[in-house]
Length: 125
Image 1 (cartoon, rainbow, N blue to C red):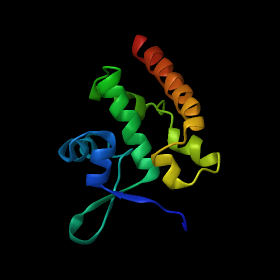
Image 2: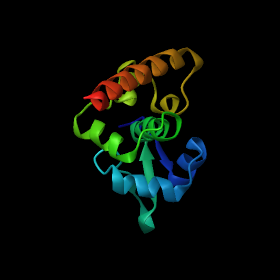
Image 3: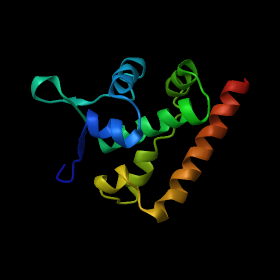
């Protein structure tokens, strides 16, 4: 793990434009998907792939109007694609995953569109 990237809860809060208390709440709601590492004094630090999951969760909740129960169902059914894994398999450095290069935006958008189509199909059942 020589290229491991960790971000503090404050850094992630600023990056996602979400209050820190909301991130702590999401940890309780989605414990399988969001597991920060804790440092001295219980400070939370997030890996790049966790930040990607948080980004997907934020977008589902805020931009696409899903409920927490809907996102939980996607996680439980294993239907929430992990955009971080897709980017990591492309050999991207963990730092770049937190702030993707412009040419990677198309890949992220396509992954999110696929995820939303899957969510729509699941919720339509």
